[in-house]
Length: 154
Image 1 (tube, rainbow, N blue to C red):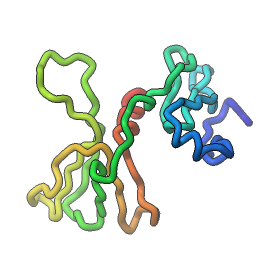
Image 2: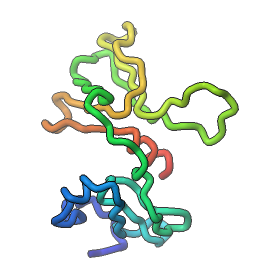
Image 3: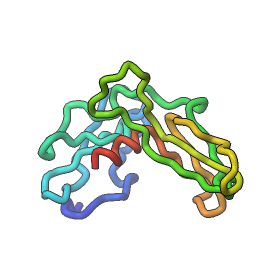
């Protein structure tokens, strides 16, 4: 394996016991390549989450270990072909510092309009969003709150 190149071949990273790992709460952390600064990048196969710490160190538990699984009720199914007025998605992540006592928004925030300038059909935050539509692969694309946090950390 070339550790200097990014690796996108998830199936090659999963061991034969992958299903057993997914059912387990224990992390299974492995090196998956190098960062731009030359240090190692680590990934948890059990939780499908980042396990790289400060200065490229390997974490003892991954960033997804203590997050409860996302249920179907917490996932918005969105066919983007139905929203000619546009669909916007962005990560709603907790702030670094908060002096309020307001509840924190976490997940994927969605805004969708059927017609341009029309009322918003969707305007809320969900733990996950599954996108479908003509320009999207048949199985759809699922974006979760964990994905939003990973983007912010990169």
